[in-house]
Image 1 (cartoon, rainbow, N blue to C red):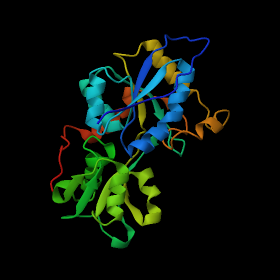
Image 2: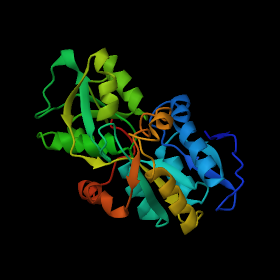
Image 3: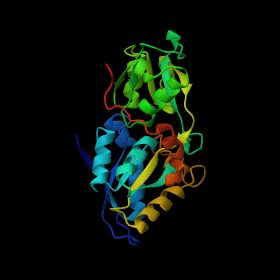
Amino acid sequence: MRFVFTLLMFVLTCQPLHARNLVLAPLPMESRETVLKQFMPMARYLQQSLGHEVVFDYSDSYEQILEKFTQGRIDLAYLGPLPYVSLKKVCPDATPLVHFREASGDPLYTCAIVAPADKRLVLEGLEHRKVALTQPLSTCGFLATNGLLRERGSALSRNLYRYLDKHDEVAKAVVRGEFDLGGIKTAIGRKYAHLGLTIMAESAPMPSFALVGNAATLSPAEREAIRQALASLDPDGKDKAMLSSWGENLRYGSVPADDGDYAPVRALLGNDAIPEDGNF
């Protein structure tokens, strides 16, 4: 289902770029309301910096975002590592602009297998357990979860797994006892620790989420202006107050991104195909 939300346009007296609409697609990691609330302050900042109106295009799945991007209907997308790598395969115009820093200050993050602390599960040789995953193209879904289980002599194919779409839905389903385990972003898993969720295993660092520009719809000057507008922000100094209103995944500043940053993800993926459906 498509949801387009237009923000107020800031009209500048001096505009280095020709004013127009920019379509921004946030990744559907949490509920629609939560995602839009997180991205609105950044959109306002980009509008003021660039003189462009920013229009949100919300999709319910990663696949929808990648399809729209390839069709030239999206100018900017907020993507995790696996969605970007998948998009780049079919759309060479996908260009990472910046990586958003995590709360640690690093432009890296990890995925985790989470479980209720009171179950005291052991991952080694795990079999016949119910595992909740996000989406097929989620880095912390099948890709990272299967990799972590393989390191411990198991695999998702030896267990029962199902896709629940969003990270918070996976966490809640595990907390409710509907699944034994879940694969989600570590930072989101920690948000549910007070409900009894514990981290059983954690992946190696992945390049953090990025704002990806569409070179088919954005000029080199526009892409560079967006990159500079975000990478120049100082989260510990002059821009700290402004950034405090940004979403948790965006407020710690950013660094310039490059396609070469995704080598670890491509190595983990190899030639494996990610199943599109669960096995129960």
